[in-house]
Length: 325
Ligand SMILES: *[C@@H]1O[C@H](CO)[C@@H](O)[C@H](O)[C@H]1NC(C)=O
Ligand SMILES: *[C@@H]1O[C@H](CO)[C@@H](O)[C@H](O)[C@H]1NC(C)=O
Ligand SMILES: *[C@@H]1O[C@H](CO)[C@@H](O)[C@H](O)[C@H]1NC(C)=O
Image (tube, rainbow, N blue to C red):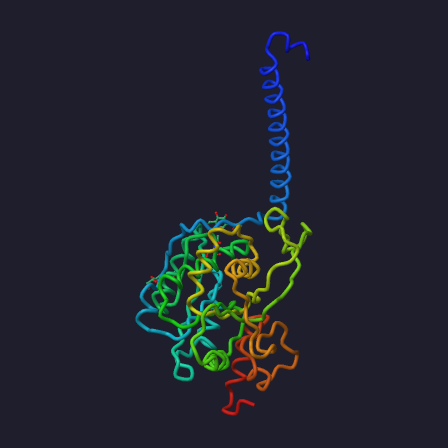
C-alpha cells in the first residue's frame, strides 16, 4: 500500500483513492466544457449565435386580438415583415392582399413585425399605420434575420390564441406573389377539413451545414443530425388550424435553431407529422422564368419575386384583362 495508508486503515485508503479519481474526472470534465464554451463563444462572435431563445415571454405592442373572432375567416394569411418595410406592406395591400372574399371564402391578411425599440419615429409611424389599416401585429422581440424562428413561434402563439375558428393558416414572406384564387381552390378541393395538415414546397433530406462561414451554419451541439427532416420552404406554407398549438407546445422541448423552416420541420418530426406534397409540384415557384406571363401566373399559388416593383407589375399584368390565359 502507498505510504499514506500507514496512517489509515485499508478501507479509508480505498475511499481516499476513489475520491481522488472522482476529483480528477470532475476537473477534466470542467476543463473540457470550459474550453468547449470558449471555442463556442469565439465562433458565435464570428457568425452570430445559432441558438435563438423562445422564452415565451414576448408581448404584443400592436395587436388585433378580436379580428379573427369578428370576421370569422376561412384562411388567415400572416406575412412576417421587418418594421421599417412599409413599402412591402403597401405592395401587398394593393395587390394580392386586397381581396377579402375569394370564391365565397373570407380571407384575412395580417402583417407580423418584431420591434426596433430604439427608433421612436418608426414606432409612431407604425402606430399610425396600425390605426389606418388595422392589420399589424407587432411583438416586442428585436426584429432580425437571426430571430425569424422567434417570429414564426410568435405567429403560432398568436394563431392558437386568437384564430382557432379559422380553418387554415398561411405563412407567406413579404416578397412572394400569392395567387389567392389558386390557394383557395386547393384548400376547397381537400373537401373535408384537414387535421395535422401542412403543405408547401416540401424539401426532403436537406443536409445541415457544418461550414462556419455559411449563412446557414448550425453547429453539431445545436442540431446533431446529418440531415433535417422534411419541411416546407419558408417562402409559403399552409397548415390546418389545429397545428399552431401543437407546434408551439412541442417547441418548448426542442432546442431552437435560427433557420425558421428547418426548425418547423424538426417540430413536425417530433409530432410525427409529415408535410404533405401539394397536388402539383409547380404550384410554388422560387425562380420564375424570365418571360413571365399571365398563363404562367394563372397556374401557381406562390411565386418568389425580386422586388416590390416586380411583385406589383406581375400582379397588374395578370389583372389587366378579364381573360386569364
Ligand atoms: C427611424 O425610422 C425612420 C422612419 O422609418 C427612418 O427614416 C430613420 O432612418 C430611422 N432612424 C434610425 C436611427 O434608424
Ligand atoms: C401620426 O399621426 C399623427 C396624427 O395623425 C400625426 O400628427 C403624426 O405626425 C404621425 N406621425 C408620424 C411619425 O407619421
Ligand atoms: C433576438 O431577440 C431577442 C429579444 O428581443 C434579443 O435580445 C436578441 O438580441 C435578438 N437576437 C438577434 C440576433 O437579433
